[in-house]
Length: 240
Ligand code: UDP
Image (tube, rainbow, N blue to C red; front, side, top):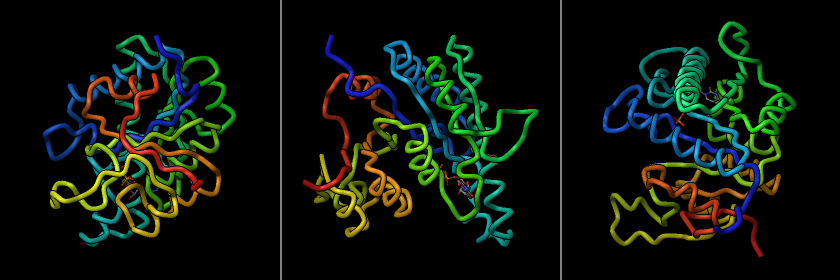
């Protein structure tokens, strides 16, 4: 069996990745399938940090459009990420995988407060570290939280698992001529405003030399094949 390409990763899942065919909340079947993929990587010896978004429940920007105060809306969004994180912890536990939830917002009855040191200890012990509540600050996204946490836990690679196969020159759902980029630089992603991650998240990766892989979470087994060296999705990294 081929060697693993990295030892420690940070996997970013959007809230929508857990929604399945629904338009709100969590699909238990989808949650289980993603949790099984995480289990397979843990069983292979890969250390895994996980950041889950909250867009399947609340997004601050959307709430603000509906008249909510933006800061309150973002706090609601961050709480949504905690709910998703608890759901993932519970599903992993049912699969026999130990996971700790660390939150950027203090809620001691529910989960641990985040420190990079504690999260790294969980990873060293082969436990999944689920990093909840984004950065703990409004006006940020969980993409930015994922970049930040990837750097803090000293991950070898940040993986953003989405609903598309990687990075394209345009939205492939709308433009059949869209070109697929197997590899591109951070600066190109920024300059062409490609739908990779938000600019804050990309800049944080660029400035800290964190390679970023964009891939489709709906391709069963793709995560494991990526870890075994298959070229899956798009790699965003520094230029030559
Ligand atoms: N959020 C925030 N600060 C953060 C991360 C998230 O305020 O550091 C809020 C924000 O309102 C965001 C929501 O949490 O819209 C859910 O996160 P996100 O939209 O990134 O989720 P995803 O699109 O990945 O499901």
